Image 1 (cartoon, rainbow, N blue to C red):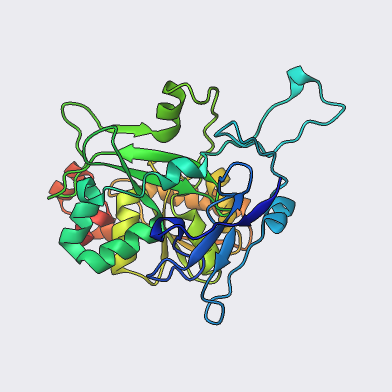
Image 2 (cartoon, helix red, strand yellow; image 1 turned 60 degrees about the vertical axis):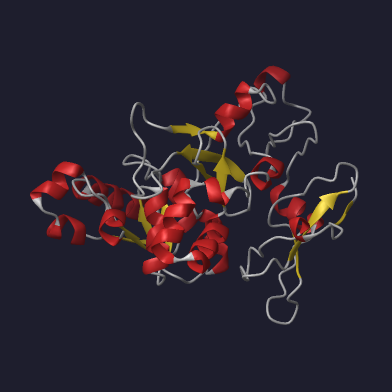
Amino acid sequence: MNFTLQPYKGVQSRYKCPSCNHRTKTFTRYINTDTGEAVAPHVGKCDRLDKCGYHLKPGEYFKEQGLVYSRKSVVDSKKKKSKKTKDSELKTTDYYIHPEYVNQSFVNYDRNNFVQFLIGKFGWDVADKLVAQYRIGTSDHWHGATIFWQLDSTGHVRSGKIMLYDKTTGKRVKKPFNHITWAHVLIQKSELVQGFKLNQCLFGEHLLITSPFKPVAIVESEKTAVIASALMPAFIWLACGSLDGLSYNKCCVLQGRQVTLFPDVNAFSRWKIKALELRRAMPGTKFNVSNELERLATADDKQKGIDIGDVLA
């Protein structure tokens, strides 16, 4: 396969740089000359040569990852088939959503309820920065729905959580049913790929490479991470997705970092135990648990099960 920098075909062919995240689209991706597909969202060159200088070439990327890439599939596998491995014994280890699906979601923000909520709260400029920073997309599965893509530290997309919010209150729509699904589920239903195995990472994990020494904060919900990032930028804000989503498999990428956990109200005890487990499993990594929400929460707050995002919003 041959690769080249994507030719300029208007602003849609340029992207936010994964390193400097400049407000203008200064990043050019490498594409496969046979298919026109991008190698990966973060493989390319920033035009700000003096002030950024980010340049990741396809050869360097493939060397680091050892990827097996199929142009006919939206799934990539890290595990190659060895001569000694029988077909029946071959198991793929990691699956990814093709960048094409991700790129197609960066549209129609005027119909994205969560983005409209961000604009109403922070203004257009801040909301635009948050959307670009966290790679937030729009889904047409439900009118107004949002996609929170899970990009890992190598720039691969593990999947995308699709949820529907009220654009005025910022609350999730749970009636007449809980509006939540996954991008890989919808792709499978469209029969483009079968047998996808979800291997989640922390939401926002792709931001770690941009600030290797910055302290990290972890919350449950993606919405909370985005809001907190705007109001408390001293941290890299990540989300584990659920009360029980704080696992070693997700957190091992934080090895050696300083991490503060911000549990939802009523979850302090469980996350305190989890922090102890993570400290044992990851020597040299600091896991602290904030008790501010638990300490300040009223009886009504505890009944509602609020999180720090509810307080900040």
